[in-house]
Length: 218
Length: 236
Image (cartoon, rainbow over all chains, first blue to last red):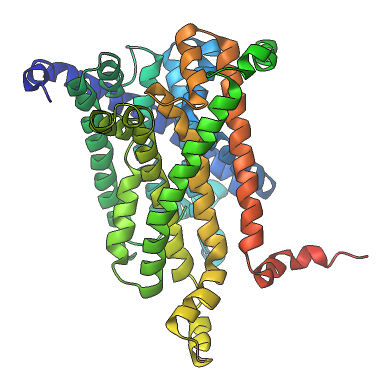
């Protein structure tokens, strides 16, 4: 059923698409992280914004990715923006919630001790709150990376210049050529699982005191 | 863009025939419900078992989290050639999307069923045993009712993800509301795309409301009272 000769001939394409896949996901996770960090700091500092910020990011998450990509085509055309805006939006939900919860989990007396030591607001954020929030931030990073890697495959509907490994999935499907279908589908799964395992190691390092089981509810 | 959307949605020809909105809506609801029911049948017993007994928790929760990493589009693609070689009709149109949606829905249901039971205060279970309840009664009369909110949250999140993600089936052989998105992109038809977006969004909202309602009905009155007590104290 599988044409191994074809596969061997297209290994350089596989490499190119894998790099594109990681690149498209990486941009989104990077930008999403920076925006979320700012939003999370805002939400924790100005309590009144906490509820609305989380509510808006939750609503964004219920918009189907296919719908968002499709809707944006009529606004931004078939460009990198159309790929990245939805990907960034989906990372916001995961990051904002995790980072804000991370800041929230810092005990009040620790904050008071920092104030008592004469830390300014900025010093307290970087030296006390951020380090203590690291475990939840890393947990958010893992979820965001893995879900973005999955969504990148969907960007293949926007044409040949995007899609990462999803390119092969769509090509293989439209040409009724299972070999190419699997050439995209299997590596994209392997990639997502590999990053999941890798980041779960990082997560364990960041929380040596925690049992690996906790913190998994949605 | 708004007027194109409204024009598309109100055009009577879009409400009739095999590609009409009622048919696509029905397909979408049908595949989402079937997938969710299968996922419930798989995930609830496992989640409740490991939550109640505390056995094999690490294995079950870790593998559920690994499932979560699987991209739905790739899952549909992998299942497609296999099932369509077995059954050219349903194996092409329906089964791949169902499998991917089950894969998507199992982790949140399983993990929350486990976490719901594991989060119930052990003292309450001891009290239930002390009253002479059997293990089965402890589970059904004390543990389960108290875990309903957490379990329901898992089901809600699974249902919403399934309704939203089932649109991906239209990239392949399945219809559903995703068909308008895929056709709209390939035909460069903004009205059709936005019409599809509105329909999917509405369906997601209705699903969410429906599950919140079921959750309300399934939650023991005592737990509901505990959460609404402050509101009930208003004067009058």
